Amino acid sequence: MTRRIHIVNAALAAALTVGVVSAQQVLITAGGATFPNPMYSKWFNEYHKKLPNVSINYQSQGSGFGVQQVTAGTIDFGASDMPMTDVQIKEFDRGVQFTKEGQKGEPFDIADEGWIADYYDAYDFINILLNGETIPETGGNNFSYFNDPTFNKRMDEANQLTGSQRDQTYGQLATDLAKGPAPWASRSFGTNIDFFGPKIGCQVNQGSYGFALNTFCIRS
Image 1 (tube, rainbow, N blue to C red):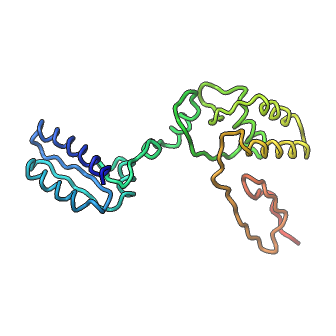
Image 2 (cartoon, rainbow, N blue to C red; image 1 turned 90 degrees about the vertical axis):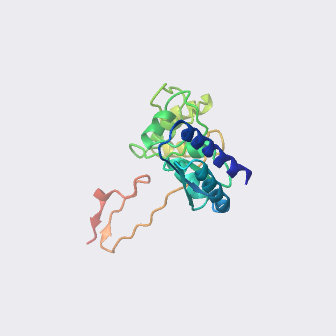
Image 3 (cartoon, rainbow, N blue to C red; image 1 turned 60 degrees about the vertical axis):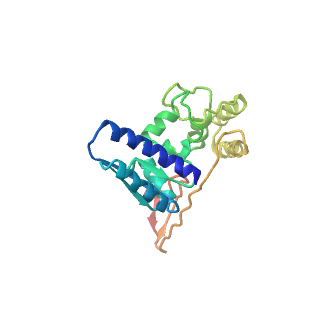
């Protein structure tokens, strides 16, 4: 209860400032927790009696609604069972997020990313995303800024190999990286189920991209 009261009091203080300096009509929009709504309604009514030019429209739709709407910037203040954190309120458009993550020295604690390689080879996943030998000041892809000389050397050596030896070496490298050195935490792994009629053959699954449509053929 204390946290919610503090949120509302801060908003009322802001409204009071507006009311003092101007007599124009002011509408403050708010929303959030349902439990304190009766108390909020009483406060808002009493406040409106003292400053008739200020009205507060509070939508009692739950704490999640308050957090969501404050994050989206569609209301002036929200009420929630728990205070918001920087993780919840610092959201960026995807392009802005990429730019910030690729900027050396940009202060961020964690980011949510996915990756689709330009072509299906382990180099375009492991070396591009985790080799720390040449991390640029801006526009980089190594968002975790991982730079381990031992693993950098293993990545370079793996990239010199071909065929099954290349695949096996990169497979072991990926396994070793996933055990802890790389500051990544996998949160999902996509799966697809594809259905084919008896006449369709020659299917080739490209791994990252799925089936290569140009390889399909009609069975005789």
